[in-house]
Amino acid sequence: MKHLTLILLLMAAALPARAERFIDVHDAWIRHIPGDRPMAGYFVLENRGDADRRLVGASSAGFGAIHLHETVDNNGTSSMRPLESAMVPAGGRALFEPGARHLMLMQRRDALEVGDEVVISLEFADGGSQSAVFTIKPVWQE
Image (cartoon, rainbow, N blue to C red; front, side, top):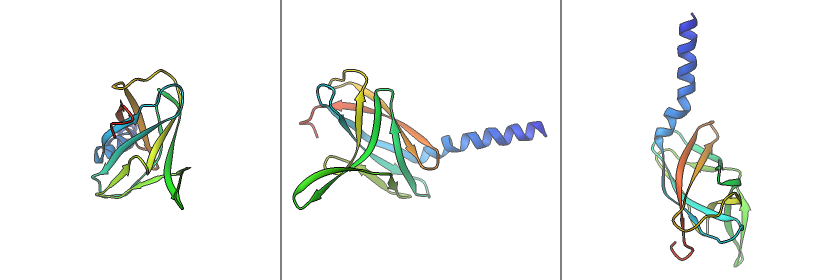
């Protein structure tokens, strides 16, 4: 009985990791902003699975706080607002791009320059996560 319980626990622990095989992160980059001002992160999430996934957060050793944000246009005036989550449909993609959804990267812990790389863990509502390497790019290279 002990062996069966151990096997079941190990299988349950492996489920979130196995599920992440169906989430791919493409074109992950961060817009370089000098100094200690917030930066923005952009990427494409591809869900190759047969169930919708909901992105609910992100974290990184390089930043004290990361929030999901969205840029909206209100009668010609652009503003940002926080997002609680972003759906990644089964068999589909979710875009995080300039002028739309993005990560707000705040409380930078180290100086970052163009060409540096930062690992960010994307967190999903089902408890799974997916790490990706984001490259720092100059503002003009969008």
